[in-house]
Image (cartoon, rainbow, N blue to C red; front, side, top):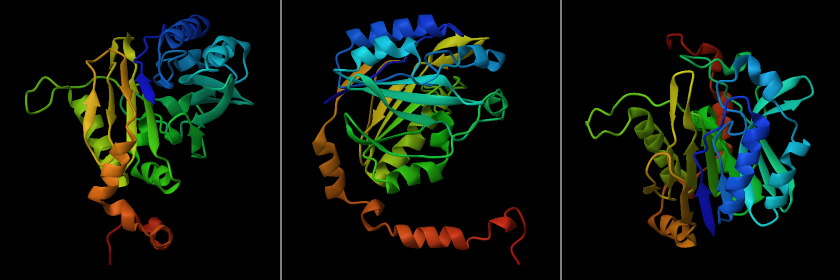
Length: 280
């Protein structure tokens, strides 16, 4: 099996044109799974453009993508309209049809972010069986919440896709030239992959919007740890190696003795109402 991480550069608000170019890239890319970034169909800094940029999952604009998906699985970030709500979502096309939609759960409202002003929040985190096996999607900020990473592990996901629109920030203290934002993503996903023996697949937008640079990073973290990546802004096509999972199992790890029911009871017993108060 081959996976392709494609750091797409959308034109802000040009959904029809972006989907057309996404279809061209998808048709030319030979892989079993193609992962495009968060909001690749519209661009990220939509703000009041959300209403015009939102599409429905069954919109005819997706017809070229549906057709190409007869031979490969394609995952694309888009602003999705459903009833009276707009969602930051990832759509999964396979076998000539739309087969899965994940709606972003955690909408950042700090710093430059104001997603909750324009989008509704998703309220479920299902796992689907895709080209790579049992697969989950955590859209950008979702992956910064360990409870969601733990939830998709508990649900049995073998692969976790992380489409992102993450601004580039600062340089690392080591002076290696690696952006601190990129380093933070790698560290976080390496912890998840090593803790839960899953493979994480990350791809970021590659664009500049309103003076904000999105770095176009793409990398995969192997089960049990270990990272493979491509130069920033370039598509990354790589093999999925089953032995990586068996090696992780042989090395062992905390996931092997996990007590889900105990953890759930401990969480339910936690006195959340006292958060931020002094412990007596």
